[in-house]
Amino acid sequence: MLIVEDIHTYYGRSHVLQGVTLAVDDGEVVALLGRNGVGKTTTIKSIIGFNPPRQGHIRLRGEDVTGRPPYRIAQAGVGLVPQGREIFPTLTVQENIMLAARIPANGGGTDGWTLARILETFPPLAQRLKNRGSQLSGGEQQMLAIARALMTNPALLLLDEPSEGLAPLIVREIGRIVRQLREEGLSILIVEQNLALALEIADRVYVMSKGKIVFEGTPDELGEQEGVRHRYLGV
Image (tube, rainbow, N blue to C red; front, side, top):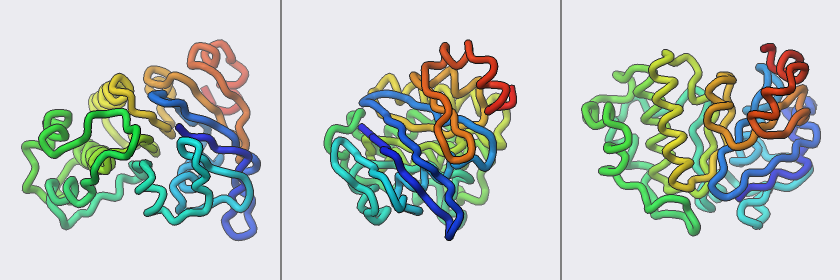
């Protein structure tokens, strides 16, 4: 589904990503882990095109999308749930959801997302359809951000820190949603600080440090690497 090959991304003269390589297979959930400031969100921004790499390649289903504008990458089948949610505060829940509606991308892992299906998957949103985005709780805003991305009917979903700042009960609900999407065959790349959540929902994990990948393996394999967890994740 996704191949990120030896990308180098900069902010001005600051060399943030230094040869990052990773992959997401069809129907796979991959977690990208690491401490704050190591380049995880920059990796997401490189993939979606907000901050394209100066070197390396990003391929979506075999097609090189490196350097394309973000809207073209989204049209190619990539959905984004950004860090901080970034919902439209003055629009209603229904308007936030429907403005992103798009027919399914070729090869998408689901049968197609509609408003009815969204409300079935996210029951709290069904009760808040007429509320503005600014009137929602943090958990509801996160559900809305995920729902909006799903309405683009992506083949690949990028989730950047979906559990950030949420209560444990809501974190468990986010985990349930991601597991459901995985069962339906959607490919997902998730950046996550909550190690327990990431290890629970991911098929494979990558660990980053200082703009480089320092570990790749299964959750079980990471669980056996105490030195990696302590040095790069602080646990």
